Image (cartoon, rainbow, N blue to C red; front, side, top):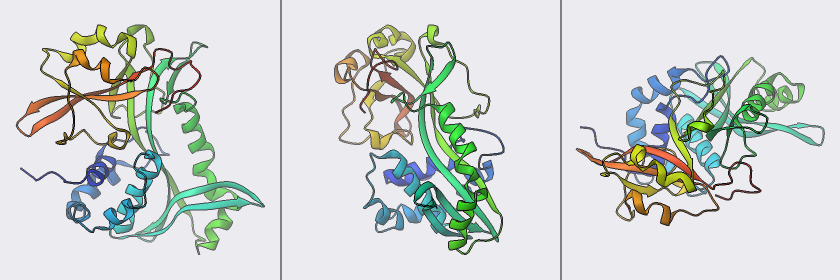
Length: 303
């Protein structure tokens, strides 16, 4: 049995590399990147797991609670360390006159080709909208999957074709064609309440990681469905541990399902995991969001 990675960033990086993409289609990075490369370069992951590694150095300047920034730092460090790639730029600004048109998340060379990746880490919960449409909202409902995906396809991935984008690339010495793709990872959470049943968007990857969500006031009514024979223990995950499957630390305070309500705030969303004892110790077997009863149609939802 292989020794598991010891540091949270490397466990998160492995998850980011090997988990299926959230979206599917021609705009998305192909499976080769998140299957073949990690398997081929496991030694590199082990190296990044060591004290004093390039990833440890990068993490010193990153607030891991800012998940988008953290996710970008993980992928940027991997690309920069991965043979035969050469990282050219990250967060490279594109200006149209005095206005910022956008930025290139990652630009790198690999096997004589130039790639542009737009990175995103998202957690979306399905819920019918007031207009009767099926929507996928972030825990902050101003963030919506349909809007994010439309912006990535219609604006961010088109930057290399825009004159201002081409000018920004030329500053980097890039005149050749650029391959643009979305590297979008995360989880989709479906409602436990059948009255909130939703449909998946057409471009969704059927293999994307899944979870569930429920309003706080309804949590107790789903005990049989979530807790089974009552052998599971539960943990509210801090934001910086939302990516990879939970590894239980010595300082974690696990609770029974019946007391889960008492540790959850009624004005913010909480990501909780259920864990069970296995041959490898306590392992995550289910995860879900418990959200305020007025979500997603209230005023604000702090994390």
